[in-house]
Length: 104
Picture 1 (cartoon, one colour):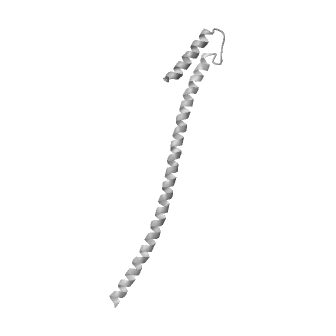
Picture 2 (tube, rainbow, N blue to C red; picture 1 turned 90 degrees about the horizontal axis):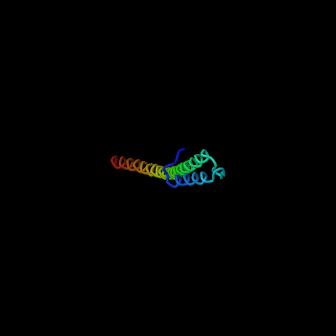
Picture 3 (cartoon, rainbow, N blue to C red; picture 1 turned 90 degrees about the vertical axis):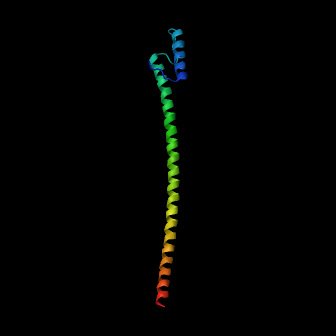
């Protein structure tokens, strides 16, 4: 029989073993050793499930943050392209003015 390192679940299993052993032929909801092992495994599974849920929640939060960062980057990129277009046009105008001034 496998007992978890978790003291509360070990104590719980030990208590149930003791209770079932002192009752003799009377059996409760945990009447056999395989059922006790299953109970212990269920506690482990619940703990693992809680850890997985926590990890999924953390990953979901990170995905949301990355999506927001990507949107902000896209908006900044669009703004920079617009600024670049305006500045490029201004450079062309100034070059034309310089050429006109040199020809005069």
